[in-house]
Image (cartoon, rainbow, N blue to C red; front, side, top):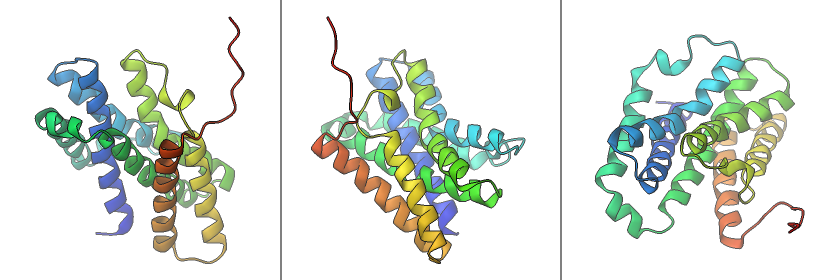
Length: 203
């Protein structure tokens, strides 16, 4: 099993957990929990595949991704009480999913021979689009548009991966380093409350 597949499966599970947690906080039933978990886990990658012209998307060619997303959602449903005692679990799950999906998105985009700038954009889409769909279904303003240092973390991760590749670092070490960087940046942004500039509210 190569690193890309390991990252892909890990990100799928953790994003399903974060999506299911949002559904539970919104008091959805089991079906709603599975739907939000699955959409969060698979939405970004599916959208990336469509942009790259890969049809049908990978999730319809390998049932493993659906099974893993459902498993993550059911795991959250069954053990939500334990997970809620760990205050940062949803944020940690989100950070892990973010780091893995950025790396996968940029890697697959570059393999399709598109420009580095487009690869960074598709890496960010892979990481955040599922969460945006989740938030819309949960009737929330998408997290990526309002919260701390989120999409920028994905962009920085994508740029880092391309720089490492251009420096001659082999693909797998570059992927591992990029994933770790994005996770660390996300955790630091939460810990130290990093925000992008905003205009003051006018009342």
